[in-house]
Image 1 (tube, rainbow, N blue to C red):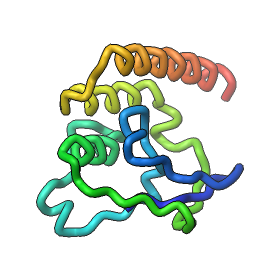
Image 2 (image 1 turned 120 degrees about the vertical axis):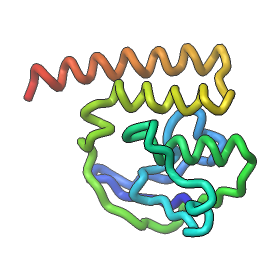
Image 3 (image 1 turned 30 degrees about the vertical axis):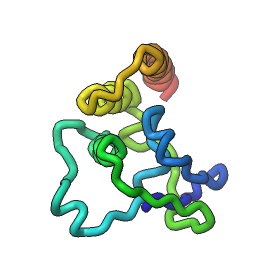
Length: 130
């Protein structure tokens, strides 16, 4: 179950699950899972901070039913967590999840290369401005 969340600068509405190939459709603080679903298909620790993302990609590739609710705010958070600070590693882990579930296409290859270099530029900027 993916639900909306509020960041310090506004409301984040969850994207449709089909957008999972291009990144996390909502903040991880706004996701709910049935315990029995996680017992049968737990998070993989091999994807670092993208473990929840890998789970969504896996379930998407398996055709599981994932519900999106966009009219309820269930979390309030500020940007700047590990996934933001070490963005390039998060992008690498997300790309690893896409490839491991055989969902990679030529377009997605270029998309993730672009994301990776943008993340590296952000990290470079962040390092020198703090």
